[in-house]
Length: 215
Image (cartoon, rainbow, N blue to C red; front, side):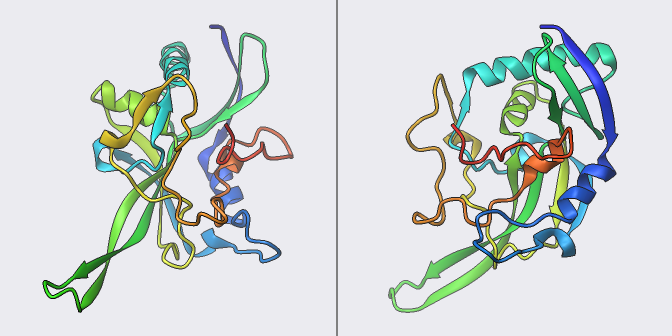
């Protein structure tokens, strides 16, 4: 693998794009979800955050390991990024890489009484990994921390992320995308309220296509 770094971008520029973006798959309604949020960089142990995908791909893991090794020669640790980089591998397409994304997300838990009549509903907050699962998996196996974009103070109760949180024990290493990828909240419109996290990796005037929903 031969990696060429074409440029780097301050993380503040990428966060500004996200701040001014709208949620995906909401019809004609424009929801500026991140306008009230707080965004910052924070370090996590991967075990402290909840994934949302039920799989990671073996070849993607190998790519991330090799890319991590190659970028260390440039002084860039992909587990501890504080900027966005634009790079090419073996003279190919220009790609962007940003830190993984974690959102403090509100989840609702229903507790039924012993008599099965009364139901209490509790709100809990979960550190939800919404982007960067392959890097998080690699960091976990290396017993190292992972620097992420941490997003909080959102209205996730009203506009929930597309999938429920799972544990790392639920995540399987696969050679191909499995039939069940996530536990989606909305079976009729799986990607409603999807976060436009792809714009963090934007390398030109036009954002890349969203990763979520692609095979």
